[in-house]
Image 1 (cartoon, rainbow, N blue to C red):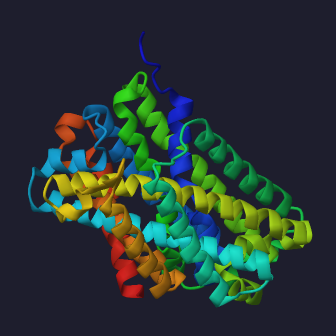
Image 2 (cartoon, rainbow, N blue to C red):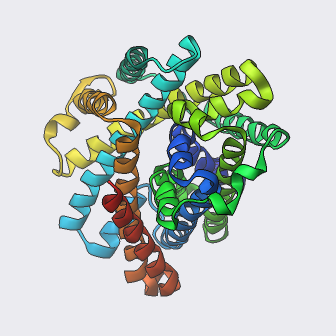
Length: 391
């Protein structure tokens, strides 16, 4: 019996689910503080870079279908050498930063939901709890996939769309006045600092071997998923800016999405968005911890990480899982939201920049337009430079 192939809808779901993890709940406040009324434009600029990079992923995935995804493309372009080894380490570090971001967001929304205000101590307690809880689950081999993850994607999209549509009725659009926009560089920085919220579409590449009619399905899946998320993020940013005073954004920067729901849904809106954030970030932590532990295991097997990452301690669990959890704890407790976001966005911008270069180099095989591949690479590296200068 033939195994059922992944269709367009499933592939798009993987891309959207990968991007709308917990990132938008965590980083929205940063963009609003930096870009102010131009926050939707900031999200749009970051989305354009994701769209250019999706073009490279689509071309490479069709030509070189592999579960290896990103790593496979780099090896194809540059061989087994320094670049792939460097990229493996950078990719792993970036996923650890993502775990720290999700954990930080879980702590922030959880503390705000329990206390109703910012509580640094409770936030740290919840941050530690969620990391240890899902590390323990993964050590036991407990991991929920398939239909449950599909339902999570639908849940998150519905919550964000309802938030946006209802918020339009109470929006004060004068707060979007272009005359009040900050300097253009601040708008760009506001977009690039949250670029990690677009990370996730590349997961479609890992399914390339199982996709039905990949030459048509993969490009469509990449572009549809990124365009849908750009639309959702820009709409969410618009509603948040138009419903909150600048001082309110500053006071609730770590849980601004929940705060932005209060003007049109009252206390119930704060609770609903906070619960949605907790569920989304918890799901993202579980999935990312599981996947990152497997990546570290494979990288260690190839000799590019210490062998302790590949040492089995219990059934399907590895010592690397505990090390990853400890590194995540250190990052989440040592840095604030802005530093975590900058580090994560910087890591993925560099990785995606190299993927665009790989597509440029392999253009004769992928039949890609070199202009778009090069533009994608330049955009990624330029955005990374802006972040470095900002920091």
